[in-house]
Image 1 (cartoon, rainbow, N blue to C red):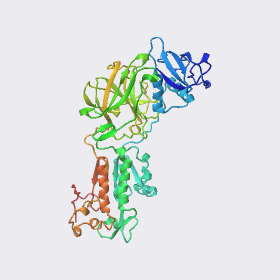
Image 2 (cartoon, rainbow, N blue to C red):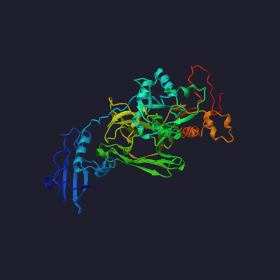
Image 3 (cartoon, rainbow, N blue to C red):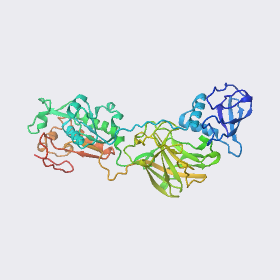
Image 4 (cartoon, helix red, strand yellow):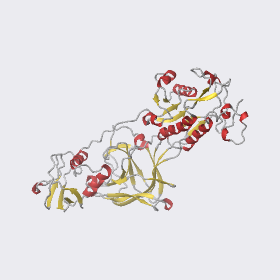
Amino acid sequence: MEAFYTTLSSPASTSVLNFQGSELPRRKLCKKSSHTILASPTLPKPFLQIYGRPQTLLYRSTRLSSGAHRVTISAEAGRQNWDFGRFVKTLFFFNGFPSPAKFFDFLVEKLSDPSPSEVVNTMGTSDIVLVAGATGGVGRRVVDILRKKGIPVRVLVRNEEKARRMLGSDVDLVIGDITKDSTLIPEYFKGVKKVINAASVIVGPKEGDTPDRAKYSQGIKFFEPEIKGDSPEKVEYIGMRNLIKAVKDNLGLRREKLLFGFEGNNYRQLPWGALDDVVMGGVSESTFQIDPSGGENGGPTGIFKGVVSTANNGGFTSIRTKNFSEPENLSAYDGLEFRLKGDGRRYKIIVRTSSDWDALGYTAGFDTEKGKWQSIRVPFSSLRPVFRARTVSDAPPFDPSIVVSLQLMFSKFEYDGKLNETFVEGPFELPVSSIHAYIIKDPITPRFVHVSSAGVTRPERPGLDLSKQPPAVRLNKELDYILTFKLKGEDLLRESGIPYVIVRPCALTEEPAGADLIFDQGDNITVL
């Protein structure tokens, strides 16, 4: 095994790699030499001290003309050569290469400290219903009904003072404007699982109205209307687009969310890299490749493959993604689904919510059937907090809203000292064509309720007699195409993939509740 490194040497007679944080040797060129390195037993778990036993390695360096050195590290007493170059390559892939001083400090910290990195539980209140347009006539009633039923409610409003006056000082509210996407901060929607959108463009009499909009709400006498404030395009179309974008990850889709792989003409790649037992002195080796014709029905697939060995007290291979540029929010889903071709062995999936390289991971094992393409589901509820193959009993619960990386592993070890009964040394191969986040609930209930308006499809109907239509239809053009943009907003919701329901009420008036309701689908109810 050979690797390259920048020359760091002390006098030739005493050259020893320093892993304990003391002053680093001075930088200078050295003669061709051979040295023995004995990992110091003074550390709780020193570098290359596997299972608490010091290991003796032979270190040979050869000066190159560039001033760099070629390093060979070989094992004594029947141990196999350790690939130091692959170890460095692994660190570089996941972390970038640090300065020499930081590199050695990193080795000491990560390989001698058995305690996991601190994990902060960021989970907050969940299953919240968000109400947009909560200070309007419909919105106020929706909030009141939900709160009386004990359902957690959060309101999205533009005016805090007005909202607290109408809804109460104890209401959970966030300040934002759906027409301005910069005001819809992601933190506002944490824990939100359903949305009721009662936001609407404001229409009022041209001659003016009372502070409580009595003229508009009475619904009997007709007043010539006009748009007050933002245009229908801004509220009904752009506002809907912004709101959908803000809540989409929290609500989920009608079908699975593709995280990796091939789905029809769609392909999503992930930055996979090998993370094998070389990090603890082992010699197992794996890789992840794309085979354009090795998948189901001759299609493309990814392949996790390699050779696993228990030499040097190793026994695992894995592939892991680099940390995602932005955490994946999978809170709307129930678990992960793998489409793969089994080999009869048991594998692990490790889901991480921390960006630290050596941190606790939420882990589950799964069995495969040999030679068969199959779909395997791993519920989030089955994930257990594990650090270095040991369960962490006091770890926070898994938070699917901040998934940072994924890792697939084939290992000799299960958890807490147990062994993988399907483990066999030698080559292995696991084709994986896709990884999805899935929703198990069936039937899927609406997660976005949108209050629209009757008549939205009528302005586009050919040959429509406007004289027989309600005022909103007759005055669609004069009201800046209010119904046209309401329909465009509906279409955005239909195309979003979010489970939804659209309610199109006829004219609403301020009258006592309890009257009969007429329901139908489409846009043909007109009550005169």
